[in-house]
Image (cartoon, rainbow, N blue to C red; front, top):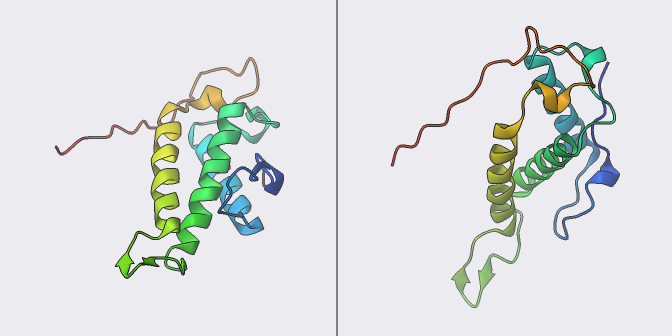
Length: 131
């Protein structure tokens, strides 16, 4: 059963990108896989979801749409100077935001109230800087 965390109506805040149904489907699948990866059963996943999950889902959908659009910006040449593709800029923005939001998520972000934490948590990701 495919869970619906976000809908197309949730993705109406960006003035440049318009998410398609495939972007929403991907984001919902991504969220479901993440929730199951934390050890939650489908009946332990909160629908409607929390605000942070909804926000993360919208960001994933926009990131997906931006990536699909990279290279199609016809305005990259301005006054003979090459400027950066707006869709590439959007992709970078949404990718960074997605990384930050995802780092804050845990099983409780997805779970219905009073879900036992036993066996939950998944594998954490530690980001290393190579500065």
